[in-house]
Length: 132
Image 1: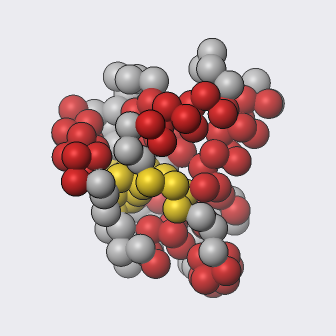
Image 2: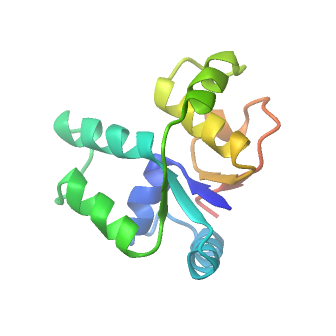
């Protein structure tokens, strides 16, 4: 399973060239296999970024979410196990990142991210640089 970090999901939904060619190929393969996922917390983070004017996307959060889900992306809910694991991670304090990493770990997923903090974190996390 591939799990998209919030920005990678936005790049995928909006066909942003920031998403690397290799990443797009991996994502397309995962979609066809039904193995592409986004944490539900990413939709919260997306809505928050839009509300604060920190994201230059012209679509509202619910439309972006629908676009992703319509492509076959699986939305992974934030479970109690994910919430509990997120607190114990050796990771920076950003709650969304902690929940996304915990989601990847518990689902044995590869996290597609361009966040240097996540690409370089000490967690035993499978990851792929979204810019490649």
